[in-house]
Amino acid sequence: MDRFHAPSALWAMHPGFLEAMLKSGSIDAMLPDSLRQLATAMSSGQTAAKAADPIRDGSTLIIPVRGTLAPQGLYGTTYYNVLADQVRDAAADDKIGAIVLAVRSPGGYVWGCAECGDAIFEARQSKPVIAVADPYCFSAAYWLATQATAFYCTTSGEVGSVGVRSGHTDMSGFESKIGMITTLVASHPDKIAGHPYGPLAEEDRAEIQQGVDESNGLFAAAIARGRGMKTSDVAAVHGTGKTFSAPRALANGAIDGVSTLRDVVSKYNTGRARLSLMRRQAAAMEMALAI
View 1: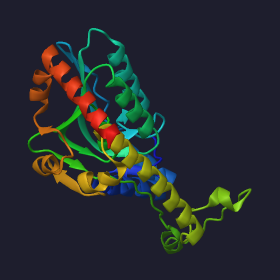
View 2 (view 1 turned 180 degrees about the vertical axis):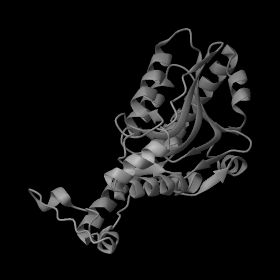
View 3 (view 1 turned 135 degrees about the vertical axis):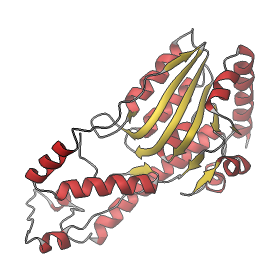
């Protein structure tokens, strides 16, 4: 398993899930190799769950979007590039009338998210792409879901956690307690900026903040594009980090309806329903462009 869970990476992920994952990664990184190997042996080699394969139901393809979202090469359950390719292939397949994204994800890395979102948005130009929070869809997963033609949440579900975060871990206190000192040698101070072996310098904090702000701007712009609204209105409708139950999200106008995955698949398995959705989408986009 890839143990790269750098706190300074840019994350679009529900804070509770992220804290648990980063805590696990930080503890693992602090262990001496011998203890880490022992811990791995005692865990019986447990690894992340394998991503589920797409399921065909009539003319509808159901693509599961599960667990941590990541670019291939980093720890994740669903890889952005794999998901994007699945969506593109389905969009090009004349035998598939609609694509349903069955989302159960806390979000994940920012890296690769925008490209995957673009693939989903492009696919909906040729056929309906419907996202369903089943039962939760947070942060980076929410980014992707808002790029679909329509976005639903199951009855007991929850969505939101819009925003980007990063961070820094100062391990110097821990090292001093165990009698350890880390000395870094680099070709330039920029090469070790924001290192975890001392307090975070203000200039490094500013650099991290700039990255967070830039990514959050892309997040808001993607939601605005996908939902046919002004970027300035995104925060009022979709929030700035809070999560919402299905009824609250519907009342805010963040989703298109409260419905189970089964009901959504059944609804869009007919050509008439797909055509109606595409017409509504085209009308909504025209109104958004006219604003």
